Image 1 (cartoon, one colour):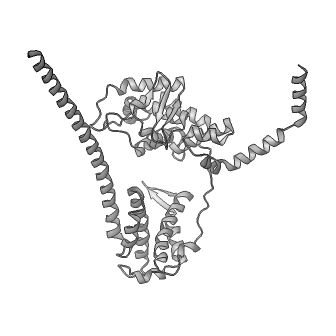
Image 2: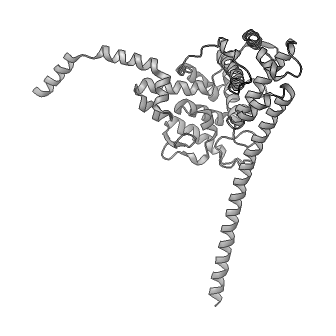
Image 3: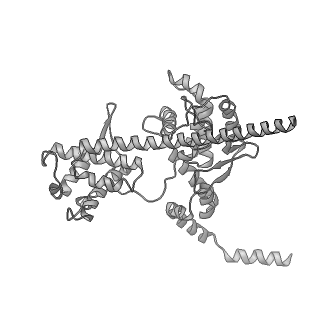
Length: 382
């Protein structure tokens, strides 16, 4: 009887332990989901502040529809771009304040062109510079989407932006940073020194930054995929990492150099005490939270602007494009390139159509049927 009572006590303890574990897991998932929800709500709150403070009342019709179609960050960007446009209209003195819906049809292509000319140059920290063609294209696209909504709903008869020339953005991906630039970049991260106070933080973060940057260079991983990596996604015994952020989880083999670099960082990472909810994250910030995409971009900018100068900044996109282009050149095959980079073959085709044509021309020029006949004849004789 005594033995049975001990067994029942142990069984009860196990049930309590399992129940407690399940409760902890549920609470953790709830907290994470609430954090995400609160971030989205904060983004919407900031966007709505722009809408209410900078735009006429009728603009809310457009944003009410877009809230169901856009992600919170995209919704926020739309609010910033359109707030800038309505601020410009107010400064011209051509419209009522607040503007009325009936006045929307009075906006001409000339007014749009003058606005675009005004926003082409920006001043940041006392330095005036011109925005890129891609940035200008995005701003004009947001404006065009706004007018398209009111044309579709018969509030106005035409879209004035349709008669405005937009910057031509070439199709396809760029080649990214060069091999020499990447080598110099990685060498500076491993051995270079940053000036002043930045050098103190650099010593604390050197192994993390080296692991992160070499990982992007050697695998073509995106910034979002990089920061989403967990410690369990790295298997140094089999020399692989698992990228779960893609359409389907990709197992990517890594080089001995990258294994050593990641191992050096992991020896520091296992000693860290992350903030609750960030325990599994591979790359942590100084605040012991999972590194964000913006923080990752800031890390790249910090090193490259010091190394190459203020006007030359290697981004995560440059590193990704460099790896993608090199892998395409190596294999000259859409499907192999797509598989390695976690893309669809259609995307590779659209990106590298000009290079595919060059490859076909080269392949055709090198084709020699006489050489093939000679080789076949020699093999038959043997």
